[in-house]
Length: 165
Image (cartoon, rainbow, N blue to C red; front, side):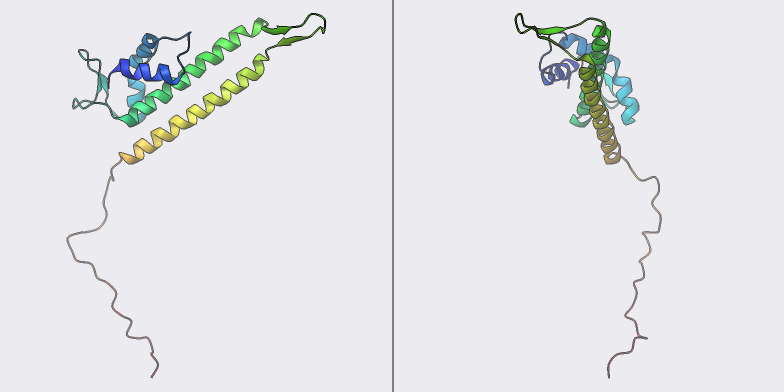
């Protein structure tokens, strides 16, 4: 799967925000392949000629790591939204002004920050769950105890048990 394809999917999943572009997402994906490798204990890299994400054996990335990469970007996106909202806390955003009824409606940016933080925490938890599931699915036992070459002994019927006569 190419970096541009993944970036386009992320862009569409975020509902095509106007303050974001596919090329910016592609850049983020290119620079964070190493973080994905660290999380999953893999060795993905980007092929220079095709821009596909492949492992050391030249096998294309599967859907599980792609979904983790998408969730990682989602966490990054909400980080940016929180930072942008914190920077704009100094300015007042007025939504509605009435003349004769004398009412003014403002945006409560603290509540927006709380909502964005909650969404970000949910995305982080989702990343953790996906990484754990991926690691468990791809894990191998370190040691197998026992000797499988010798036939085991099974218990014979209990001859000491008293039966009705």
